[in-house]
Image 1: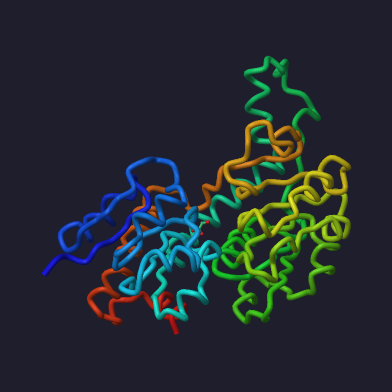
Image 2 (image 1 turned 30 degrees about the vertical axis):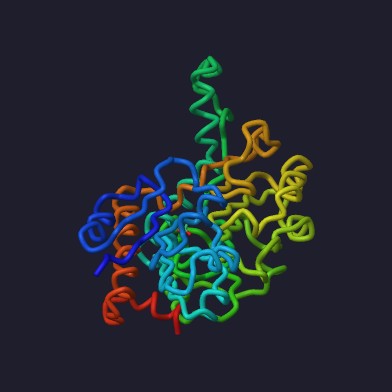
Length: 328
Ligand SMILES: O=CC(=O)O
């Protein structure tokens, strides 16, 4: 009997994950470092039993039609699933794999790093040295704003938002507000207070976005939202670019409607190097590296491989619990 076929949409998947699949299956690996072009995806997905994809691969009805009825599982090496048309997969009984939990720590760490980079001018201060602007220690040079005694607002108290809040508690912030669909009992761990969206925007010194991108959250940070925020507020986005109306963010930063922003996610990704957002002094932009630690990415690859194996071997016990939740 011929081996089941798996399409893998990147050549540089951590080897620990690939090794789990190599012996048992026939792997069709996209061999260029850039995302697989749509036409290639349509051609290569034909006849495969499983897809190992990443967040740059849009998996929709058209792609599934090209795959054919033998496709059993699409496993993404990501926690976000906004690139996958979940209901189309569910209606075809194709299982969906993703990688929650494993990236919570690394993403929370990066969000804190980004917040501090913005609030303490870390990147500008470093650049200033090379530009010859460090003439002496100076009382007010490169002064930023501290976290101690401040109000932090977290939008979306999922796993990552929760961890960010836990870490920030140890920075002696005055209060942590959160906006979430449901109240979270566990928020008592950091004395979190559930508030409505306007209240969070109006009262927070730092607004941190960790919400999933859904039709409800798309563009929730628009000009109205930035206008609600304090003039001194710092905005940090570790979620998806599309939760923000990016032009409204640029306007808010240019007009000093808010003080500064740090974003690990943008629209589009990558941003063109002459993009307006990159020209602003009060914005730190990172290239979507929330989960980018060797340990996390390696584990994400293994979980993605295991999600595929669980489906192809018809072994539901092998599925991580969170995987089962998406598929129920
Ligand atoms: O953004 C990263 C992910 O969804 O894993």
